[in-house]
Image (cartoon, rainbow, N blue to C red):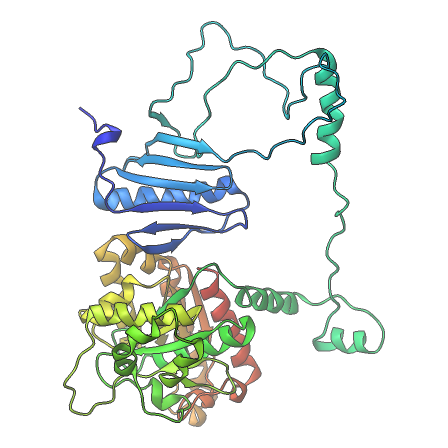
Length: 480
């Protein structure tokens, strides 16, 4: 016998939320998973259901899901074989029409309704029921039960049509947005001389990347930058993604060094007027989470980057090494940071088995895997993704939706001959092509001496490097 809806556990707690602003998320046991964008509310529903079917397949059993969208809310049962059952659905209440004036005669025709009733069903058609029933996996919300319409006069139906056209099918906002003229290259030069020129494809692509990184998303977002091999460019990647996202979006952004040993994020960024680290923030978490605490109090624990507009939470630098951050402490620090920041970019250590590493993954919305164009770094990146894929569920989703950032080798770059430089670029391309079939996006970053040593500043980069990091940040933001 099959499982009935009443036998399906409500664990884990799963909610699917589709909003009228074009965004959606699936929340599993408190962890938010962003639904891929769609061209319509129905496509967002389909994408959300696909994530939930994957969760049911991971658990190898049906799951119970609360659904919310602009049209109503209800409950579904989702099976691993893509079968969807409707348990309940309540449409959102329609807005009330204006009351008729008091002078309306009592013998007036019936009130005009919003839609013309459909023809009566054939006698052989089965009546709709309110019980759970299987529906197509692409159907959300379930089709409402067919009700017998109230009789209407022909005059009322004829009067309704022009009302619907005037209120629903007419809009005065029909003008397309004006394309701003070119600002770059020879096209931009001609525009400044008074001859308006359209932007090139390259400039349009850059504008789209700027638009992507400039958005604000509902709720905080967490990015984890991971690779099991040291020297894979994790810390420069954290700094550059934080700088680009903070500069363009204006969103409060923090880079958090979640290293199980002494991390290097603090060495590559500005230091504030104190020496506090993540352990001090955890100790003060009760006060920082108090409703009466002022938002500016977080400045006592983070180090502000004056030019690049983001903050840094350093790892513990106690040389005795007598404390390792636990999974529960990661939860506490993440709770504090997501109260004060919209974007959290997490640096990581080299041990995927560490408790703080694994708990970081639980909080992650977007995974980023940096790699330099050196074989062992690339192999470590592959093994990191393989480990997450093998764990299934949320970890596997992160691996499949990861962004891999391939930086050209920095070894003795300035002294390389022309042939050696070509080999280095070819190796970076080979590694990028190798990752492309298995992740959502791969971005290449050119060599830049400003990333090699010392504090990292966005403005110190060459223009081509700045453009490449903008593209990388846009690829990351597309996963939100």
